[in-house]
Amino acid sequence: MTETQVQAAVEKFEALIREQNEHAERIAGQGDFVDYSTLSPIVIGVCGGDGIGPIITKESARVLEYMLADEVRAGKVVFKVIDGLTIENRVAAGKAIPDDVLEELKSCHVILKGPTTTPQAGDPWPNIESANVAMRKALDLFCNLRPVKVPEEGIDWTFFRENTEGAYAVGSKGVNVTDDLAMDFVVTTTEGTRRIAKLAYDYARRNGKERVSIVTKANVIKTTDGKFLRLCKEVGADYPEIITDEWYIDIMTAKLIDQKRRRDFKVIVLPNLYGDIITDEAAEFQGGVGTAGSANIGKKYAMFEAIHGSAPRMIREGRGQYADPCSMLRASVMLLSHIGYQKQADLLENALDICMFKEKKLQITGRDTGCTCAEFGDYVMQTVKGLCE
Ligand code: IPM
Ligand code: MG
Image (tube, rainbow, N blue to C red; front, side, top):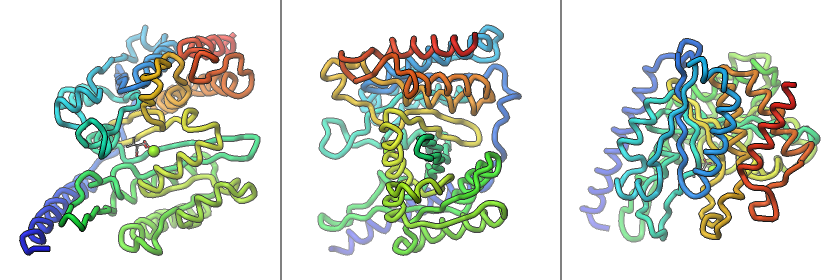
Protein backbone atom coordinates (compact mmCIF):
# COMPACT_ATOMS: atom_id res chain seq x y z
CA MET A 1 0.00 0.00 0.00
CA THR A 2 1.33 3.43 -0.92
CA GLU A 3 0.89 6.68 1.02
CA THR A 4 -1.16 7.99 -1.93
CA GLN A 5 -3.57 5.06 -1.53
CA VAL A 6 -3.91 5.73 2.19
CA GLN A 7 -4.53 9.41 1.51
CA ALA A 8 -7.13 8.68 -1.19
CA ALA A 9 -8.99 6.34 1.17
CA VAL A 10 -8.86 8.88 4.00
CA GLU A 11 -10.32 11.54 1.71
CA LYS A 12 -13.19 9.25 0.73
CA PHE A 13 -13.84 8.45 4.37
CA GLU A 14 -13.79 12.13 5.25
CA ALA A 15 -16.44 12.83 2.59
CA LEU A 16 -18.62 10.09 4.08
CA ILE A 17 -18.24 11.50 7.58
CA ARG A 18 -19.36 14.95 6.39
CA GLU A 19 -22.28 13.50 4.41
CA GLN A 20 -23.52 11.34 7.29
CA ASN A 21 -23.09 14.15 9.79
CA GLU A 22 -25.36 16.28 7.60
CA HIS A 23 -27.91 13.47 7.68
CA ALA A 24 -27.62 13.23 11.48
CA GLU A 25 -28.14 16.99 11.89
CA ARG A 26 -30.99 17.13 9.39
CA ILE A 27 -33.03 14.39 11.07
CA ALA A 28 -32.35 15.75 14.55
CA GLY A 29 -34.12 18.97 13.52
CA GLN A 30 -37.18 17.35 11.98
CA GLY A 31 -40.76 18.09 12.96
CA ASP A 32 -43.67 15.75 13.47
CA PHE A 33 -45.46 13.27 11.21
CA VAL A 34 -47.80 14.63 8.53
CA ASP A 35 -51.48 14.48 9.48
CA TYR A 36 -53.28 12.96 6.50
CA SER A 37 -56.67 14.13 7.75
CA THR A 38 -55.59 17.70 6.94
CA LEU A 39 -54.64 16.90 3.33
CA SER A 40 -57.12 17.24 0.50
CA PRO A 41 -56.73 15.61 -1.86
CA ILE A 42 -54.35 12.89 -0.71
CA VAL A 43 -52.19 12.10 -3.74
CA ILE A 44 -51.33 8.40 -4.18
CA GLY A 45 -48.46 7.81 -6.60
CA VAL A 46 -48.42 4.53 -8.51
CA CYS A 47 -44.97 3.59 -9.72
CA GLY A 48 -44.59 0.27 -11.59
CA GLY A 49 -40.87 -0.53 -11.55
CA ASP A 50 -39.30 -3.41 -13.50
CA GLY A 51 -39.98 -7.04 -14.37
CA ILE A 52 -43.33 -8.14 -12.92
CA GLY A 53 -43.51 -4.79 -11.08
CA PRO A 54 -45.78 -2.94 -13.54
CA ILE A 55 -48.16 -5.95 -13.72
CA ILE A 56 -48.68 -6.46 -9.98
CA THR A 57 -48.65 -2.71 -9.28
CA LYS A 58 -51.31 -1.98 -11.89
CA GLU A 59 -53.48 -4.73 -10.44
CA SER A 60 -53.08 -3.49 -6.87
CA ALA A 61 -53.81 0.09 -7.95
CA ARG A 62 -57.00 -1.19 -9.63
CA VAL A 63 -58.06 -2.81 -6.34
CA LEU A 64 -57.09 0.33 -4.37
CA GLU A 65 -59.14 2.52 -6.72
CA TYR A 66 -62.06 0.16 -6.15
CA MET A 67 -61.64 0.43 -2.36
CA LEU A 68 -61.44 4.24 -2.56
CA ALA A 69 -64.01 4.80 -5.32
CA ASP A 70 -66.18 7.08 -3.14
CA GLU A 71 -63.19 9.13 -1.98
CA VAL A 72 -61.95 9.56 -5.56
CA ARG A 73 -65.42 10.66 -6.67
CA ALA A 74 -65.54 13.16 -3.79
CA GLY A 75 -62.12 14.53 -4.78
CA LYS A 76 -60.53 13.48 -1.48
CA VAL A 77 -58.08 11.08 -3.08
CA VAL A 78 -56.23 11.34 -6.39
CA PHE A 79 -54.16 8.63 -8.10
CA LYS A 80 -51.12 9.68 -10.08
CA VAL A 81 -49.23 7.23 -12.32
CA ILE A 82 -45.46 7.74 -12.33
CA ASP A 83 -43.54 6.12 -15.18
CA GLY A 84 -39.84 6.07 -15.60
CA LEU A 85 -38.50 4.14 -12.62
CA THR A 86 -37.26 1.39 -14.95
CA ILE A 87 -33.77 -0.05 -15.02
CA GLU A 88 -33.34 1.25 -18.62
CA ASN A 89 -34.17 4.85 -17.58
CA ARG A 90 -32.08 4.64 -14.43
CA VAL A 91 -29.09 3.38 -16.40
CA ALA A 92 -29.60 6.10 -19.06
CA ALA A 93 -29.72 8.80 -16.33
CA GLY A 94 -26.78 7.16 -14.50
CA LYS A 95 -28.79 7.54 -11.28
CA ALA A 96 -30.68 5.28 -8.92
CA ILE A 97 -33.70 7.58 -9.37
CA PRO A 98 -33.76 9.98 -12.36
CA ASP A 99 -34.33 13.60 -11.24
CA ASP A 100 -37.68 14.01 -13.01
CA VAL A 101 -38.99 10.80 -11.42
CA LEU A 102 -37.86 11.95 -7.98
CA GLU A 103 -39.70 15.25 -8.49
CA GLU A 104 -42.88 13.38 -9.38
CA LEU A 105 -42.50 11.09 -6.37
CA LYS A 106 -42.17 14.14 -4.16
CA SER A 107 -45.40 15.56 -5.56
CA CYS A 108 -47.27 12.61 -3.98
CA HIS A 109 -48.10 12.01 -0.32
CA VAL A 110 -47.87 8.24 -0.45
CA ILE A 111 -46.54 5.89 -3.10
CA LEU A 112 -47.41 2.37 -4.18
CA LYS A 113 -44.22 1.08 -5.73
CA GLY A 114 -43.53 -2.11 -7.68
CA PRO A 115 -40.24 -4.00 -7.34
CA THR A 116 -37.28 -2.53 -9.19
CA THR A 117 -34.29 -4.45 -10.51
CA THR A 118 -31.19 -3.91 -8.40
CA PRO A 119 -27.97 -4.20 -10.38
CA GLN A 120 -25.14 -6.14 -8.80
CA ALA A 121 -21.53 -6.66 -9.78
CA GLY A 122 -21.39 -8.87 -12.90
CA ASP A 123 -24.81 -7.79 -14.28
CA PRO A 124 -25.10 -6.26 -17.75
CA TRP A 125 -26.11 -3.00 -16.02
CA PRO A 126 -23.69 -0.54 -14.43
CA ASN A 127 -23.59 -1.15 -10.68
CA ILE A 128 -25.80 1.84 -9.69
CA GLU A 129 -27.40 2.06 -6.27
CA SER A 130 -30.68 0.22 -5.68
CA ALA A 131 -33.71 2.40 -6.46
CA ASN A 132 -35.34 1.14 -3.25
CA VAL A 133 -32.45 2.13 -1.10
CA ALA A 134 -32.13 5.51 -2.86
CA MET A 135 -35.85 6.24 -2.44
CA ARG A 136 -35.80 5.37 1.25
CA LYS A 137 -32.96 7.86 1.70
CA ALA A 138 -34.27 10.59 -0.65
CA LEU A 139 -37.72 10.60 1.01
CA ASP A 140 -36.30 9.82 4.47
CA LEU A 141 -38.45 6.71 4.88
CA PHE A 142 -36.73 5.65 8.05
CA CYS A 143 -39.05 2.88 9.20
CA ASN A 144 -39.59 -0.33 7.31
CA LEU A 145 -42.65 -1.95 8.81
CA ARG A 146 -43.11 -5.62 7.93
CA PRO A 147 -45.88 -7.65 9.54
CA VAL A 148 -45.93 -11.45 9.38
CA LYS A 149 -48.92 -13.46 10.63
CA VAL A 150 -49.70 -17.18 10.79
CA PRO A 151 -52.70 -17.24 13.15
CA GLU A 152 -52.98 -21.04 13.43
CA GLU A 153 -49.38 -21.21 14.64
CA GLY A 154 -49.63 -18.25 16.98
CA ILE A 155 -47.24 -16.18 14.86
CA ASP A 156 -47.97 -12.46 14.97
CA TRP A 157 -44.79 -10.52 14.37
CA THR A 158 -44.28 -6.89 13.44
CA PHE A 159 -40.77 -6.00 12.37
CA PHE A 160 -39.52 -2.42 12.65
CA ARG A 161 -36.48 -2.39 10.43
CA GLU A 162 -34.39 0.79 10.52
CA ASN A 163 -34.37 1.80 6.88
CA THR A 164 -31.84 4.54 6.08
CA GLU A 165 -28.78 3.81 8.21
CA GLY A 166 -26.72 0.79 9.27
CA ALA A 167 -24.86 -1.09 6.56
CA TYR A 168 -27.11 0.50 3.91
CA ALA A 169 -26.31 4.17 4.67
CA VAL A 170 -23.19 4.21 2.54
CA GLY A 171 -23.48 0.69 1.12
CA SER A 172 -22.64 1.86 -2.39
CA LYS A 173 -19.77 4.06 -1.19
CA GLY A 174 -17.33 1.59 0.28
CA VAL A 175 -13.64 2.08 -0.43
CA ASN A 176 -11.24 -0.17 -2.34
CA VAL A 177 -8.15 1.03 -0.53
CA THR A 178 -5.89 -1.18 -2.66
CA ASP A 179 -6.57 -4.09 -5.01
CA ASP A 180 -6.32 -6.29 -1.94
CA LEU A 181 -8.16 -4.27 0.70
CA ALA A 182 -11.83 -3.23 0.56
CA MET A 183 -13.77 -1.53 3.36
CA ASP A 184 -17.45 -0.74 3.89
CA PHE A 185 -18.91 1.40 6.65
CA VAL A 186 -21.85 1.11 9.05
CA VAL A 187 -23.69 4.16 10.38
CA THR A 188 -25.77 4.59 13.55
CA THR A 189 -27.05 8.02 14.61
CA THR A 190 -28.74 8.98 17.84
CA GLU A 191 -31.91 10.38 16.29
CA GLY A 192 -31.97 7.67 13.61
CA THR A 193 -32.14 5.03 16.34
CA ARG A 194 -34.44 6.89 18.72
CA ARG A 195 -37.06 7.54 16.06
CA ILE A 196 -37.32 3.90 14.95
CA ALA A 197 -37.33 2.67 18.56
CA LYS A 198 -40.04 5.14 19.48
CA LEU A 199 -42.19 4.05 16.57
CA ALA A 200 -41.81 0.39 17.58
CA TYR A 201 -42.70 1.01 21.23
CA ASP A 202 -45.58 3.34 20.34
CA TYR A 203 -46.94 0.65 18.06
CA ALA A 204 -46.60 -1.96 20.82
CA ARG A 205 -48.40 0.31 23.29
CA ARG A 206 -51.22 1.22 20.88
CA ASN A 207 -51.80 -2.40 19.91
CA GLY A 208 -51.47 -4.00 23.32
CA LYS A 209 -48.34 -6.00 22.40
CA GLU A 210 -46.57 -6.93 25.59
CA ARG A 211 -43.04 -7.41 24.29
CA VAL A 212 -40.47 -5.56 22.19
CA SER A 213 -37.36 -7.49 21.14
CA ILE A 214 -34.24 -5.57 20.18
CA VAL A 215 -32.04 -7.50 17.75
CA THR A 216 -28.39 -6.63 17.08
CA LYS A 217 -24.93 -8.19 16.98
CA ALA A 218 -23.67 -5.80 19.62
CA ASN A 219 -21.25 -8.39 21.03
CA VAL A 220 -19.16 -8.08 17.85
CA ILE A 221 -20.22 -4.90 16.03
CA LYS A 222 -19.64 -3.02 19.21
CA THR A 223 -19.80 0.63 18.22
CA THR A 224 -22.78 0.97 15.90
CA ASP A 225 -24.86 -1.99 17.11
CA GLY A 226 -23.85 -1.20 20.68
CA LYS A 227 -25.27 2.30 20.26
CA PHE A 228 -28.43 0.97 18.62
CA LEU A 229 -29.03 -1.44 21.50
CA ARG A 230 -28.31 1.12 24.21
CA LEU A 231 -30.61 3.77 22.70
CA CYS A 232 -33.46 1.33 22.06
CA LYS A 233 -33.29 0.26 25.71
CA GLU A 234 -33.29 3.90 26.78
CA VAL A 235 -36.44 4.55 24.73
CA GLY A 236 -37.98 1.34 26.11
CA ALA A 237 -37.57 2.62 29.66
CA ASP A 238 -40.38 5.09 28.91
CA TYR A 239 -42.77 2.17 28.32
CA PRO A 240 -42.71 0.33 31.66
CA GLU A 241 -45.72 -1.85 30.79
CA ILE A 242 -43.81 -3.38 27.87
CA ILE A 243 -41.21 -6.11 28.38
CA THR A 244 -37.98 -5.41 26.52
CA ASP A 245 -35.68 -8.25 25.61
CA GLU A 246 -32.49 -8.30 23.58
CA TRP A 247 -31.26 -10.89 21.12
CA TYR A 248 -28.32 -11.35 18.84
CA ILE A 249 -29.28 -11.75 15.22
CA ASP A 250 -27.81 -15.25 14.89
CA ILE A 251 -29.81 -16.79 17.72
CA MET A 252 -32.92 -14.80 16.75
CA THR A 253 -32.69 -16.32 13.27
CA ALA A 254 -32.68 -19.76 14.91
CA LYS A 255 -35.44 -18.97 17.42
CA LEU A 256 -37.86 -17.96 14.67
CA ILE A 257 -37.85 -21.67 13.77
CA ASP A 258 -38.36 -22.78 17.39
CA GLN A 259 -42.10 -23.47 17.50
CA LYS A 260 -42.36 -23.01 21.26
CA ARG A 261 -40.36 -19.81 21.57
CA ARG A 262 -41.32 -17.94 18.43
CA ARG A 263 -44.84 -17.21 19.64
CA ASP A 264 -43.36 -14.99 22.34
CA PHE A 265 -41.99 -12.51 19.80
CA LYS A 266 -44.35 -9.66 18.99
CA VAL A 267 -42.62 -6.45 18.01
CA ILE A 268 -39.05 -6.64 16.80
CA VAL A 269 -36.82 -3.60 16.25
CA LEU A 270 -33.52 -3.96 14.45
CA PRO A 271 -30.88 -2.33 12.26
CA ASN A 272 -31.25 -2.26 8.50
CA LEU A 273 -29.31 -5.30 7.28
CA TYR A 274 -30.54 -7.70 9.97
CA GLY A 275 -34.07 -6.50 9.26
CA ASP A 276 -33.62 -7.17 5.57
CA ILE A 277 -32.46 -10.73 6.15
CA ILE A 278 -34.78 -11.82 8.91
CA THR A 279 -37.97 -10.46 7.30
CA ASP A 280 -37.43 -12.75 4.29
CA GLU A 281 -37.05 -15.67 6.69
CA ALA A 282 -40.13 -14.59 8.64
CA ALA A 283 -42.24 -14.18 5.47
CA GLU A 284 -41.43 -17.77 4.55
CA PHE A 285 -43.58 -19.05 7.44
CA GLN A 286 -46.52 -17.14 6.04
CA GLY A 287 -46.20 -18.60 2.55
CA GLY A 288 -43.14 -16.86 1.13
CA VAL A 289 -41.98 -13.38 0.21
CA GLY A 290 -44.78 -13.23 -2.41
CA THR A 291 -47.31 -12.94 0.42
CA ALA A 292 -45.69 -10.13 2.40
CA GLY A 293 -46.10 -6.40 2.06
CA SER A 294 -43.84 -3.70 3.38
CA ALA A 295 -44.44 -0.11 4.49
CA ASN A 296 -41.63 2.44 4.30
CA ILE A 297 -42.62 5.26 6.58
CA GLY A 298 -41.17 8.71 7.05
CA LYS A 299 -42.46 11.89 8.63
CA LYS A 300 -43.44 13.50 5.32
CA TYR A 301 -43.74 10.64 2.81
CA ALA A 302 -44.54 6.95 2.89
CA MET A 303 -44.01 4.24 0.30
CA PHE A 304 -45.62 0.80 0.14
CA GLU A 305 -44.14 -2.15 -1.70
CA ALA A 306 -43.67 -5.89 -1.97
CA ILE A 307 -40.77 -7.38 -0.04
CA HIS A 308 -39.60 -9.38 -3.05
CA GLY A 309 -37.75 -8.49 -6.24
CA SER A 310 -38.82 -7.94 -9.84
CA ALA A 311 -38.67 -11.62 -10.96
CA PRO A 312 -37.10 -10.90 -14.38
CA ARG A 313 -37.13 -14.64 -15.10
CA MET A 314 -40.92 -14.71 -15.15
CA ILE A 315 -40.87 -11.98 -17.80
CA ARG A 316 -38.12 -13.72 -19.81
CA GLU A 317 -40.17 -16.90 -19.80
CA GLY A 318 -43.33 -15.03 -20.84
CA ARG A 319 -45.18 -15.74 -17.56
CA GLY A 320 -45.60 -12.12 -16.40
CA GLN A 321 -49.41 -12.17 -16.47
CA TYR A 322 -49.37 -15.02 -13.92
CA ALA A 323 -47.41 -12.98 -11.35
CA ASP A 324 -48.80 -13.01 -7.81
CA PRO A 325 -50.12 -9.57 -6.73
CA CYS A 326 -50.63 -10.60 -3.07
CA SER A 327 -47.56 -8.86 -1.68
CA MET A 328 -48.60 -5.60 -3.33
CA LEU A 329 -52.18 -6.08 -2.14
CA ARG A 330 -50.89 -6.56 1.43
CA ALA A 331 -48.87 -3.38 0.95
CA SER A 332 -52.08 -1.68 -0.21
CA VAL A 333 -53.76 -2.68 3.07
CA MET A 334 -50.97 -0.89 4.93
CA LEU A 335 -51.30 2.15 2.64
CA LEU A 336 -55.04 2.44 3.34
CA SER A 337 -54.47 2.16 7.06
CA HIS A 338 -51.60 4.66 6.99
CA ILE A 339 -53.64 7.41 5.32
CA GLY A 340 -56.53 6.94 7.71
CA TYR A 341 -58.91 4.65 5.78
CA GLN A 342 -58.90 1.90 8.41
CA LYS A 343 -62.34 0.55 7.47
CA GLN A 344 -61.23 -0.06 3.88
CA ALA A 345 -57.93 -1.49 5.12
CA ASP A 346 -59.72 -4.04 7.34
CA LEU A 347 -62.10 -4.94 4.53
CA LEU A 348 -59.30 -5.55 2.04
CA GLU A 349 -57.32 -7.51 4.62
CA ASN A 350 -60.33 -9.74 5.33
CA ALA A 351 -60.87 -10.30 1.63
CA LEU A 352 -57.22 -11.22 1.15
CA ASP A 353 -57.33 -13.69 4.04
CA ILE A 354 -60.37 -15.31 2.43
CA CYS A 355 -58.85 -15.44 -1.07
CA MET A 356 -55.36 -16.51 0.01
CA PHE A 357 -56.02 -18.87 2.92
CA LYS A 358 -59.65 -19.71 3.65
CA GLU A 359 -61.61 -20.06 0.44
CA LYS A 360 -58.83 -20.23 -2.17
CA LYS A 361 -61.26 -20.41 -5.12
CA LEU A 362 -58.43 -19.35 -7.42
CA GLN A 363 -54.82 -20.43 -7.11
CA ILE A 364 -51.79 -18.49 -8.25
CA THR A 365 -48.97 -20.75 -9.39
CA GLY A 366 -46.88 -18.29 -11.39
CA ARG A 367 -47.71 -20.15 -14.61
CA ASP A 368 -50.68 -21.15 -16.77
CA THR A 369 -51.58 -23.91 -14.33
CA GLY A 370 -53.08 -21.17 -12.14
CA CYS A 371 -55.06 -17.97 -12.54
CA THR A 372 -53.70 -14.68 -13.86
CA CYS A 373 -52.83 -11.65 -11.78
CA ALA A 374 -55.88 -9.80 -13.17
CA GLU A 375 -58.21 -12.73 -12.42
CA PHE A 376 -56.97 -12.76 -8.85
CA GLY A 377 -57.58 -8.99 -8.61
CA ASP A 378 -61.18 -9.55 -9.78
CA TYR A 379 -61.56 -12.35 -7.22
CA VAL A 380 -60.40 -10.03 -4.42
CA MET A 381 -62.78 -7.25 -5.49
CA GLN A 382 -65.72 -9.68 -5.75
CA THR A 383 -64.87 -10.92 -2.26
CA VAL A 384 -64.81 -7.35 -0.95
CA LYS A 385 -68.19 -6.77 -2.58
CA GLY A 386 -69.53 -9.94 -0.94
CA LEU A 387 -68.32 -8.78 2.46
CA CYS A 388 -70.16 -5.47 2.03
CA GLU A 389 -73.52 -7.06 1.17
C1 IPM B 1 -35.91 -5.36 0.54
C2 IPM B 1 -35.00 -5.68 -0.61
C3 IPM B 1 -34.04 -4.52 -0.84
C4 IPM B 1 -33.24 -4.32 0.41
C5 IPM B 1 -33.15 -4.70 -2.08
C6 IPM B 1 -33.97 -4.90 -3.33
C7 IPM B 1 -32.18 -3.58 -2.25
O1 IPM B 1 -34.32 -6.86 -0.37
O2 IPM B 1 -36.69 -4.39 0.42
O3 IPM B 1 -35.87 -6.06 1.54
O4 IPM B 1 -32.18 -4.92 0.57
O5 IPM B 1 -33.68 -3.55 1.26
MG1 MG C 1 -34.87 -7.86 1.40
